[in-house]
Structure formats: structure tokens, C-alpha cells
Length: 62
Image 1: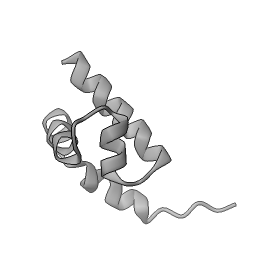
Image 2: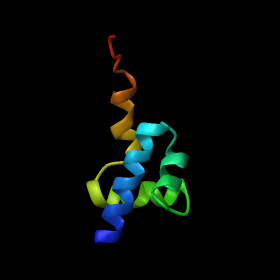
Image 3: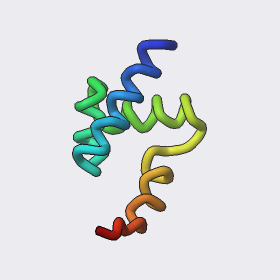
Image 4: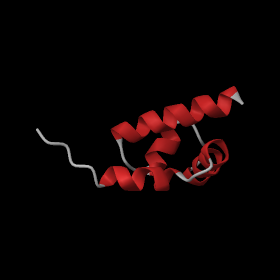
């Protein structure tokens, strides 16, 4: 539904501020990180941590 999609988008924007899934879940107005992970997995077919893991290895050069 649009509401879930909107919440997931807000949570992903929250990950730009803080890399913690709990903070992202609260930013997306989910009740907790488990609810966020469950909705993310239903929406995209993968867990949020599986998406974030490769991004942690990226180093930005100044």
C-alpha cells in the first residue's frame, strides 16, 4: 500500500542520518525495528541489513 511505501521511504531517509535500523524505523514511524524489517522484506524481497552491509564497506574520498 502507499502508506507502507511512504513509511519505508521515510525510514530509508532516516538511514542517511543514522545507520542504526532502530533509529530508521522510528524515523519511518514504525512501531519498532522488527516491524520495519518485516515491511521492508515484504516490499523489496530482502532485509534492510542485507542492503546496508555492502554500503558500510564504501569509503568516500575527500
